[in-house]
Image (cartoon, rainbow, N blue to C red; front, side, top):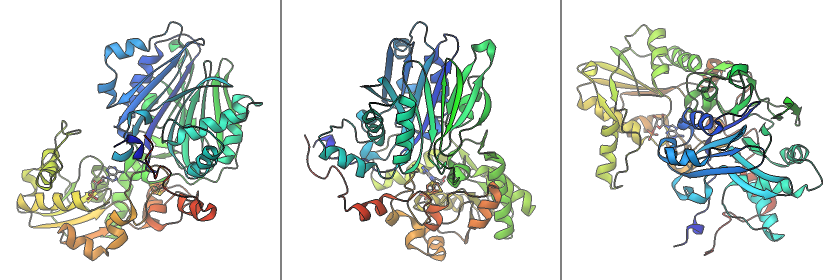
Amino acid sequence: MSQWLEMDKPQEECGVFAIHLNEPADIAALCHLGLFALQHRGQESCGICVSNGRDIVIEKDMGLVSEVFSETRLDKLHLTNARTGIGHTRYSTTGSSLRFNAQPLTVRSNKGLLALAHNGNFTNAKHIRNQMLNEGAVFQTTNDSEVMINLVARYSHLSLIDATARVMAELEGGFAVVMMDKNKIIGLRDAHGVRPLVIGEMPAEQGGGFVFASEPSALHVIGARFLRDVRPGELVTADEQGLHSRQVLTATPSPCAFEWIYFARGDGALDGADVHVSRIRMGEVLAQEAPVDADVVVGVPDSGLPAAIGYARASGILYDMGLYKSPYAGRTFINPNQRLRELKVRLKLAPTASVKGKRVILVDDSIVRGTTSGRIVQLLRNAGATEVHFRVSSPPIKYPCYYGIDTAARKELAAATMTVTEIQQKIGADSLAYISEVGVARAIGLANTCLACFNGAYPAGHPGEEAEKDGIEMPLFDSVIS
Ligand code: AMP
Ligand code: SF4
């Protein structure tokens, strides 16, 4: 069967990175380090693109950063006098984990050689792509980046920056994009700032210059200083003359709450709100909203740990490490039959003696399908826990995400089809409670955040609305193209 049968699903969980230095440097090595620090944002494929002002080289493939970038492969990216580069780590659901979708995407255009990498989704991309296909355009990938780069190229009479600014106004959805030509990097966020993007400055002794990245973790690792977040609707450029900013769209901030709940790394702040501190607060709020008498608070490693610490602090109940996580089980390919899938959680997590004979409060950041959560509850019971009270530091996930986080299709979401009591029975817990929407917003501390996967209020629209409006057919590749 042709790979083209596979329609790209809307989820694009990704990490993006861009660097432009004033002095030549080992740009490939710096992008490599930056991607390591963004690995948690995408594990399916990665890529790096480097320029020295004359040539552009690119290496990308399926796999983790450590798997794709061997010494030989990094050597291929080594250009004398290189000062500019971008990088990308991508996670996408199985159907679209195809090599040709790996980013950055590179093209020759009327604006010269361009490379682009994005995080998130353009919710009207399919509509635009259909229009372009009808007009005779051809596409080599099934991802949204190609739609954007084609749109930019259509404004042949405009400079790259002016064309990109125009395109920002045409694209809908939640996204952060980095682009480069031979001499500069560009970074932008959608008008709602759904997906994060930060700016860092390289110290003068390391050549000076600027870095754009999905998270501060990628700045820290290369010794860059956090400068500020890219503003919602802002387009920033770093080139020979320094950093430039253009507020292209009116900012109506609504950053993704899930970044603070689960997705972002805990060692930084996004839009002024510290990720780790927010997670601790979510646990504290949860303890106030859903108290229960127990002997020990246990977090599900890794993402449930800060909220468990917060819950323990606020409740005064002992915090302990009740689950040990194997550091080596990250990517294990297991034959997908039911029995082995059940064993997979055992490969990752094992209960410690701390839960034996104890009434346990088990804290995790989210329940998506409820499958893993049920297996963890069972692990604790098998290890002698007398009660397991499940507490979740996100509200029930009832709606899919159209802006880049893989929270599963609606019918697969436990909270979309079951009541809290039914989910509690499914996962086999003695009690189950979620943080409230107000509680999670209070813990993050920002005036507005996207909470659409909890309440269905999509700040930047969703493709269903587009499809209804335009009567377009979905999915796009619904027939065999081989
Ligand atoms: P389940 O019980 O099967 O719904 O799995 C819940 C677990 O999935 C929690 O530990 C979450 O941390 C984790 N999780 C939540 N969102 C995602 C995501 N987008 N990708 C991978 N894991 C996730
Ligand atoms: Fe984040 Fe949920 Fe909004 Fe998606 S729908 S951007 S996961 S808050």
